[in-house]
Length: 266
Image 1: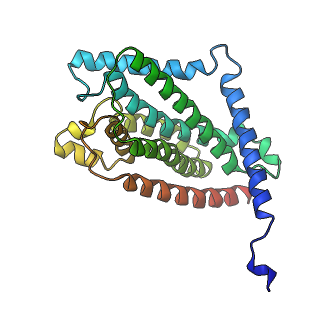
Image 2: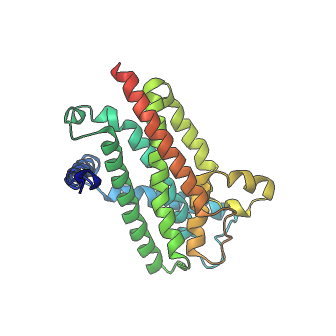
């Protein structure tokens, strides 16, 4: 029998080594971000909690209320957690290569490893923040209903994945056109206000909500709120719409990363 018909036994050890590399990079990232300050990991929770408090007061001032069955803290948390998973992943991915040039001298470490490690840290940080804030909200009597856990889990998986794809795209393009590094933060500020982080896009008139819901981040936020409250209007599109965005962004990002790396080497 032809031995070439069977997969190489070296594939599994190679994946194991790569997994260990990514784990080591993620632990290094955690120490760099949170190990050098007294507040440490607590700072990430404070940042999210502070933003929730500010926009809670803003909505109270406007007389806006959360959907029935969902407290305001939960409503805003469902906006900020997907947003941070997406935007922080982009931000961290764009700086991954420039901040770790020395590590790239090791043959086991690739640029994609650096970005995946940063994605894992962002995802884990925001997940811990969400659980702690939800616990505090429950203790304070904030109403919440977990009606669609599958949808909620899908949004928590897709948000950083979309961030990784877009981070790869922007990081690769920025290596070819460095000015882009200054333009991306401006784009992210605009996207923040167009994604329904502190308001519900589906409650807007159709002439506004329909184009805004073409934004995959707005979709993620709408689906996350739908996961917590049966009374919250279901988005116009499926999670498959966001998954398609993730797939396209990842494929395009990987192609651009390879192209940009080749141009820089030459």
